[in-house]
Length: 436
Ligand code: PLP
Image (tube, rainbow, N blue to C red; front, side, top):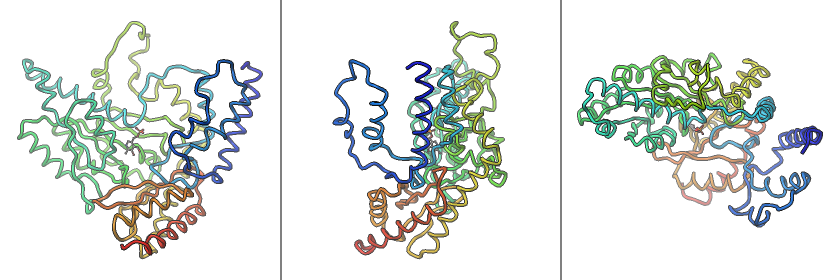
């Protein structure tokens, strides 16, 4: 493809993308194919001779689209949002053209792991400073990290990768699924009495199951007093802190050693774009210092460990989005999702057959039919089998709960009402068929 053809194809691709997004709600949100469907649609081997561009484009509808879950359909209410905006797509094209290596962190899961590894290094160094004869393996085998039982699974996995114990702190419905200071304090004391070394706590602001907020104003001082690294995972909720009315959810941030949120979830910056702040740069530099000659340059001391500084890929997208939407545009977008979540919540509350399972703080509504888990599992299966809307579940206090997450940039009130009508229709059928 030469420059002349690239100009033409690029314009066609923009049209294709615009048509796809403009008409996305006419597509089935969840694919109706079985794993392996692609096998019969594509050749066994890569082509010996080049295909034409037209052939490739034709295969987008024939081969690719049948297997796609349309995350940007206004009928997609599963997981959490993954951002999508035109300025970010344009910036992605430009990043692709500039094509430098970002040397940067990736996602929220990596931020949790990076913070954990830095905390492990800091803890070992602190102990060795006061007890230089102690063998390092004897220290690491005693380390203990904590996170909420509501934390994202990547936190537990970070513990596995780092080879340290990760204890889950129990939460209660009566405490809105937030970690309580008293519970953490008790676990720390018990573990210290058993000869363990508490060194890391991952707090979550906006948990994946129910968007709960750990009490960091209480938890932070405990961690600081015990020299425990407090990392804050605000992967989803972090974007909302650009609105002053949600800022109080961030109270206690001053106690954190590190903080992360995903602009690629709820800030209209396409995947991937995750930002991480660290209170003390030297804690990270100390843990991950690598100094090969081929990476040396004159400015290597200037902010190397901050996520967005030299990651052109990600920061360019942010820069386009921030400038083109402006703070006001981004705040409006977040507020609209929260309003739509409130609208859905009122529909649920107005129907006596249903209950709300957790406080609706941002753009996530956890709800269920009053009754057995079986009835709710069947309802969710019917909803997703219908392929008109897509939701995923969570387990709260042993109860099977449906999560309705505002995800798409284009979701409007009419989509919410349509989704609710469908849910209640299916609920009616399920309740007639099953004891509840
Ligand atoms: N933390 C929380 C609270 C999440 O909800 C998620 C994903 O939904 C993650 C971490 C993982 O994010 P990532 O895919 O960027 O690693």
